Image 1 (cartoon, rainbow, N blue to C red):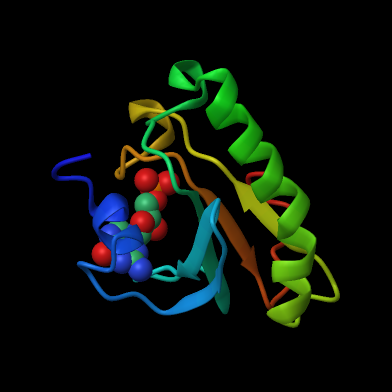
Image 2: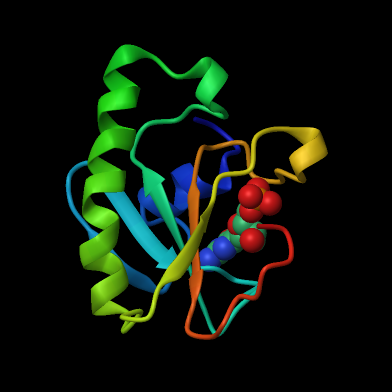
Length: 113
Ligand code: DGP
């Protein structure tokens, strides 16, 4: 997708600090970390929100979710982590390519879930 920053990262046109990659997904460190560990897991197919997701894309999201425990373990998040998937304007979604935030490396507290 033209002008999508995450598509450009997936294509290698913009550098990123990768922590995992396979044919379905890319995981890389967030440029503006909100926790000691902050990684984004991005399916390699462009769609903005769950509402726009096709059946095939839902399979990629399933694969991302299945892989996240191993990614989290590789990041040393043995004591747990938080997942966030912002959907649209009110959620503060700024990049309109679906992505799953992994936040951890510290006690996240109980504010905002
Ligand atoms: P969201 O608010 O859910 O759309 O989060 C988008 C995240 O993407 C935000 O935490 C910052 C991150 N981000 C934006 N541009 C870049 C970039 O060029 N590189 C990396 N690594 N992260 C980015």
